[in-house]
Image (cartoon, rainbow, N blue to C red; front, side, top):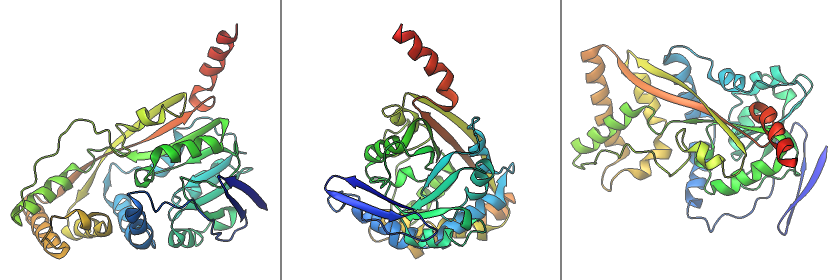
Length: 325
């Protein structure tokens, strides 16, 4: 199935078959975060290895045990079974099973900016039921009003121009469509931040404690509702607290080391990643050796946003009728 759409002076064509399709994107070289996007595509998410370490860690060491992906999808109470779903930043396909169970008569498109991640997702056991495309959330190549559901889970904080991406998501959603975006609290896994500050101090670089007020920067559980409310009439937030509980140092060290491509550039000048990790490993081993475990507290959630549908459908229909009187 072929579609053609236009963005500015650039026309796009893409074939929605079960093949990876490269779509031309609006250049972002003028964006100050362009280098970071290059890093995301070429290092952090060039393939699934680093992400897989983190996903596996959360699956094995989270207490209480929770199927987070199904929990996210369950917060939308109005699945019909025939929805058209766009999964932006699909990664290795963590939501495939849950979505496909909910849309037996629907259509599922998985998109990611990373060719490597799309290739990995195509190895999923249910890949034959999913269409794949390489896409930039800031320049979606789909017609207006195309989708009933857009998933953008744990990825909007990577987007350089968040307003542009949210405007694009709003554009491709139908009037009663729903955006579902899972996101972490800015305070999640704060124990890692404390260990990091101490490691840098031991390496001769004192780092002041972070201000614990709600940040307006980025895209977090705390500020997401406010940012989404500029694009959608109705926004609701659901939260799920949990913890990572480690009794051995290795999975902790592996988890932190998997963040190298995202965190190394923020190290102070003169401190290498190897030195940083050596001090981090020493701290973690001592803590677990003394207390018998390391507990890292987590807070994540999902934000649902819509104009007319889902949780807000009945209310907005009634409100619009009254306003029309």
